[in-house]
Image (cartoon, rainbow, N blue to C red; front, side):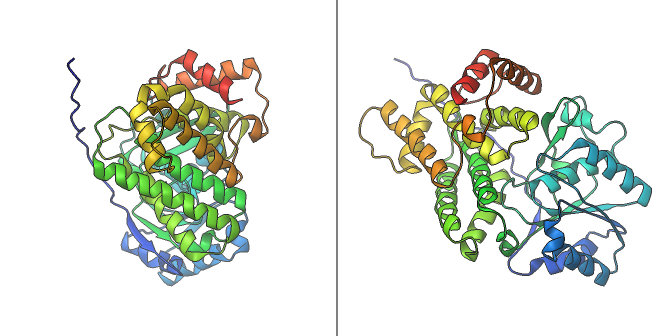
Length: 399
């Protein structure tokens, strides 16, 4: 019997973001912005937490000491809204802003990237997220990171929610990559446990989406990916008990950046991303925390597709979840899926949509499936290519 011989996939790796990591590094924000030759900055942030902690005032002082004028726009929420993006675009044009400093987590950074697209390009910025046009540029962006989760501080992607239809859509373009990212793990210590856990799931999933594919992966990429996932799991458990553990916060923060800057995707032909698509529709319609939504659907997705990608699921079970190599390949793969769900529960994350607090009707599921297909052109996935009927089945399994 002739066996198909797969060749390793060619890849490009581009990670231009300067990282400034460690305690007190946020005080360097003004100097870092000045290095970019900015003349006026938009300081973009979320809710009152950056104010209450004093971080925003320190950022303002740093910019003032560097002699850089700025304007501010707060109000970013999880699953960042298109309406605030429009406000930011108008403000930047009015004030002749030429640099955006995002102070916050992935939602703030994503909103900043969308504003950057809107300032640098004519027409409606939502066109890029609807894949109707390709952005020709983006206002330069810097980041002071306060939440380890999305990896947007080093990625080429952003995700925005349009309140008209509550559509959550992502767009990726290298021109939006941050010029610098300031990462002080101490800034994440005040996060609630649920938000910390949700962020850890998001970080893991950015690597897991790339890990489950049909390619001949590089051993080095696989090994790095497996170690990254195990590292996040280990430190997530620590942070549930010791939220002010600096080393654990640092491990998770750095993992978040490396998980989504392309490194764990080298040679994987892009990866799967079906779980993210399933969650995006849930997040857009019901405004759930992204990581929690991912853990709620992942087990059902995995059980639906694992036979089509059995070797990868077996390897994942053994190398990541420490499942003993006893029994059939299918048994080992299923034990690995079960072990990951047990981990999710151990850090307070859901493994079903019901555990998210949602009761989905059949009509809800049909609408979610339609929106998934609209967003991805009718099909999604690498471990197993999913079409509308598959998506409906997974949502029903997950509810």
